[in-house]
Length: 416
Ligand code: HAM
Image (cartoon, rainbow, N blue to C red; front, side):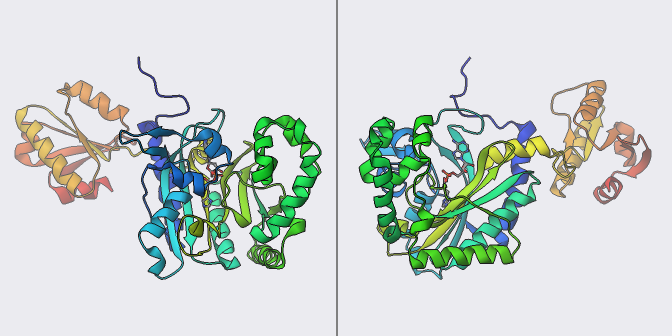
């Protein structure tokens, strides 16, 4: 038997309605904040992620699905959505549109990860990007929206952690201090950290190796090195969040795993599961890095797989149920069979979810099937019912039966 690749999952009909529910609710919120959908290719030129995400990140160094296509081009399955969204923004001249541009996406991403709880090789993100504003107000609006999305799904124990990782100006001074701290012990760090020391020492703070984590204890924190502009920006974000009643914790350890971040970064962490459900931050240099004009931006992505894992654990709400048929029409004899199909077609055109036999089932088997699928009502028709245009409609929950004229309006009124 051929099995699915490691780190992927099948989202079966018995579960997909939960995904649809989450996506629909998230979409409502995103659209209320003015975000419009963008869809970008599943694969891009590898260079986009090397330059956008950063060639010293785990994602680029270890996790990308990269291959040569038949034309010998290096192609990569997108590991995240921001680089593609920014490429599309530049390539399609969106800078000339009224700014800022607000875009959302719901797309699968691909990372060759060590598969474990909440960590998959194909996973889905719901993301949002605001491109074209440097104002702290954009950070606040985006974080509020993320908070609203998370709260919508009644997930207990999610903490918003925020930090500022400054701009290239303050980061230069910070990196010197960090190198001075790490430098004395660099021989004790893992090989990956050693390669990052010169080019991107901040990445060392993100290393998951136990010994590196221990060595990082007591490292200088970026918040002590912020320039005036970055410091004021961060203060403004914090004050505004407090005024709006959005609770947060400052976590000076957040550096984020992707290189494009500047200033505000944030993560919504599930305390019960121990992983991050939604994460993002400012990326004021990325548009320029990818060949556009200097354009400030901020965004986030929510791990939809992780959200659904927690959602399933804590929600058995009544409004999240797989749709069941409003009506099953069972029929006896050729004439009634044809009439059942005709009625079903008409009712479906009127927005009613109707099932009727398409498996040559006996009457007994049909009734059993109607019961199994949880149909709310049942109509049984034979030749007499077709000729008289009259039948009985049964409420499958209460067992109550009523006469119904076999015309569409009558049936619909009885289904209510
Ligand atoms: P990220 O932190 O790499 O950021 O991913 C965002 C979220 O995607 C994570 O917090 C997590 O919930 C989910 N996620 C990441 N990797 C996996 C995985 N292997 N399996 C399951 N879920 C995963 C980004 O991707 C940025 N592009 C976010 C962003 C948008 N920043 C600015 N704009």
